[in-house]
Image (cartoon, rainbow, N blue to C red; front, side, top):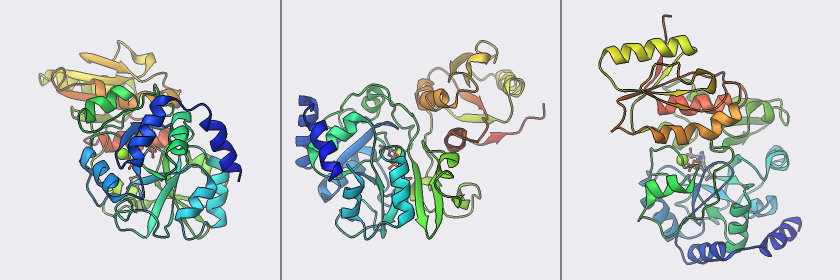
Length: 344
Ligand code: TXA
Ligand code: MG
């Protein structure tokens, strides 16, 4: 198959670190590795012991299923009952890349991976190290983001070390993750593409493949149970309480000024245009206001930079929620204590 040819081409350049990681994974161990979205913590998705190690290292609740990383569309068929045409079209359009597709599984994978659900989330990553690792391992790789549960996802090897030092045997360092936000998770329901988690593939991009793309209502209506178990947990939380201020620089300045009057040491996630203007004691910039790709790439690193020893409260502003802004606003909302509506 075409998938095999690609694997062999990739295999020729496999370096010793990847061989070592693959040997660990074949032996039931877990290894952190880079993907184009965020770093993952990978283990053999057919091995119960390996999956238990993933949940234990992260401190992840056992009812939150893991996504499985595969080498090709053909391999996805090995773990699923059938791949509907619409799912196949999504794979052709977005794989390899930041799209996870939920499909009914066929029982081949460890039941711990899917947390007892009938479905499994599958993704073919684009990052060369991730692809080489899957090829060298010869196994489907279950891999959640490689952070401690509840922390921002790691976008650099150093973040993984901060969270999991001493808890896992190896981290493959592939530099900074490109997208910086997790994959988009979708479920194909009849002719509908239901978005369970906004991410690296935008709604606008999905709509180029299907005219029937909807977002799980539970993501905007708090009382409904989300179809993606992971979306019900507190997530991406920085060490310091984060407040999301609706509006632009003036609203941000006002919120920061009020916190300072209360004696708080303030931090702000700003954009390049506002550097030095927010009034916060400490600022970290995410990039140019219009450059949503830069903001996506920098967001988790910035959330990790603010330590409780340095600031008491953290502020940022809302972003337009089209294109990658949809995923950015989803993460900011989940990382924060809520949106502050300004009266400015
Ligand atoms: O970009 C990514 O997706 C990264 C990299 C490493 O690939 N992985 C990642 O995995 O973010 P994780 O476990 O942190 O997030 C997976 C999300 C969770 O919200 C989980 O609840 C959901 O996908 N999920 C997994 N299997 C599911 C299923 N069968 N049905 C519904 N949601 C599922
Ligand atoms: Mg995660």
